[in-house]
Amino acid sequence: MSSVIRRYSEKDLTIASFNELDLTTRTEISKLIKTPKSYVAETLGGRGAVRFGEISGLGEIVVKQYARGGVLRRIIKSSHLRLGKVVRSQWEFLMLHRVRQLGVRAPLPIAFAYTRGFFYQAWLIMEKIQSANSLAALSLTDQDLVRSVACEVIRQIEILVRNQVFHLDLHPGNVLIDGAGLVWFIDFDKAKKVTLTRQQLKELYLRRWRRAVIKHELPDYLSELICGGLRKLEEDEQL
Image (cartoon, one colour):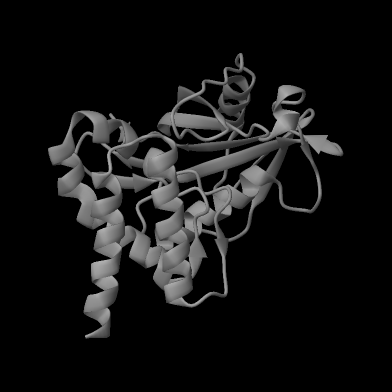
């Protein structure tokens, strides 16, 4: 894969990728981006509007549009102030490539798109994870499955810790289990490289996970499994 980002201008829209995107592919992406927006409030869900579609040669894909958080979301749902050269969709596009190279199972990013101007809208195009359910939802319906994948969740968090990557929004709603029982981490738009010790970073992950479980009234065993597993891993490493 090339490290050079290729950008294509489609009127007021820029579509970019590491890969060559022919006119047909760009047109299909543009059409999916322009379909009606829908923001669905889900337990522990992200702030993005997600649509599903299919693109010739790429198969089933997901288009994520970035929505605003906080009070401003009531007024402006999807426009963002351009503060630097890297827009939100490009940041997550690059983070997904990085964590996949580290060994974390995350969706394959295909392209990102954004509009021009001081205020912009942004989209990320990714592969679709088949038959996926969040760990948050499964914790209420299938405890046996959750327990069976806990070690893999812990292993992938440990990869992030070891490589000093902090996924600020890593919680049970952003951990997906696909139809084959594989664990996926999603929503890396707030992930970043940090200069913390492994212990400090692990504590951040533990606090974030516990807070999410308590806030959204998820079963206590979710904290016991993941936080307890990370603690035990730490103790084993010190032996």
